[in-house]
Length: 206
Image 1 (cartoon, helix red, strand yellow):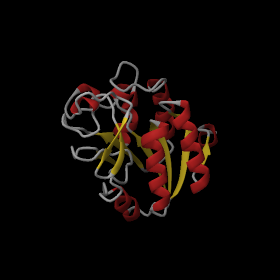
Image 2 (cartoon, rainbow, N blue to C red):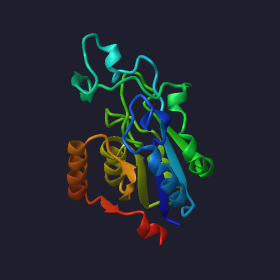
Image 3 (cartoon, one colour):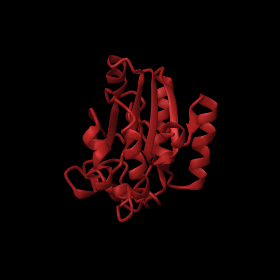
């Protein structure tokens, strides 16, 4: 088998009631479980931040969430505190339990306080790898299917880096949810430019 399913950040803080909730986030978990049952290789990513994470607005006096600042590696969006190591918000959503139990690996990202990490492959400096690419190559994977949260950030940047790392990337759109329409559209434009495919889950489940 040369395919793998990458399930991006199915965590409490990205679902309803969480600190950085994505509308409809919890609702995609049953579909993700159905998808993971169809794949022999499932890998899950997990945002795993420390309280002093550079991307937290609370660490920049006077700054507001959802504004940008300039940091050493470029522009960085500021977020509410979320997915703090060891806290309930960083835990996987309970409805994703079958997928997490099946996962052969969990790739934690964003644990370096000086660099945020959207992609499952690299931190936001675009130089520091997570080890995911090497794992996939060792397994003989050539094509990755992606789903999870959020479509316009962590799913997007993981898919883009997958292509840059030489993998074929396919985003399962109805098993993902976006934070905002504008960034969702930007992600779709980027996918078209890079050759990232978008499909509906039913094409894999039928």
